[in-house]
Length: 278
Image 1 (cartoon, helix red, strand yellow):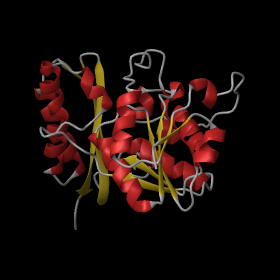
Image 2 (tube, one colour):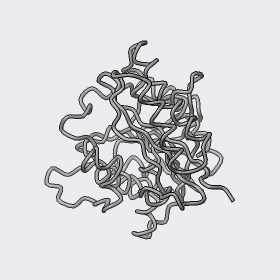
Image 3 (spheres, helix red, strand yellow):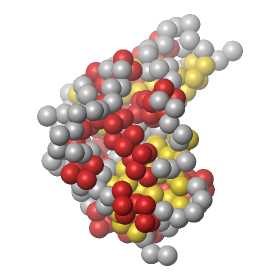
Image 4 (tube, rainbow, N blue to C red):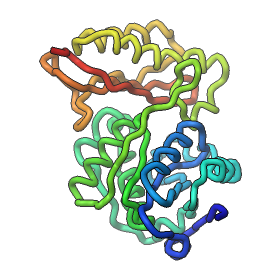
């Protein structure tokens, strides 16, 4: 069966097959990381739907919405190669009524860490994800661990609002040099890319430690050594479920997360590690 491109709810209804549906929400500019999500989705359901939609609600006024890469024809080829059944590619007008009034609020968890740097970002993320769930009606949705706070918030939304969708997190996929795959990597010059590698080096340095203070210090030292071309936004060690900072007494899993701007490009990365093992 050939790949189906759906533009609206009616198209999705016509395209729906039998059995379980897995959704992979994306903003397009698909890369190997997205491919890994599609493969995981295929292992969990009978039909795989990939959404390709650059969501205006999750971009701030000074962010890169207008220049975010849009490569739809290439994205279709990726989806065909991975055996995707349906690509949902709505316009903003299809997704949002011109007189739209109701949106989700991510709450306090959406205002810290990444949310502090990008006010309103997670409100836009949760609003579009819930709309996608309502439109596609999947039983499973797959998201990447690279956007760890987003993943945690979507899990919280599903729990708080009793949304009948299983949320599956997939490991971060990295390039050969350790840089986490991102659609924004294409913005980096060769020199910028070398600077950007400090993010993954910082995470590895943190992984080598076990106490919260030492983990943070090791990561910050690597980032400071990258020089002035790396404009650090944050480096935090947080609880995976709440994204609140962990204290020295914390034992168990934690997320070491970092965000920085290199030139005009803002990148994020994280790693899940074990703190204070018994």
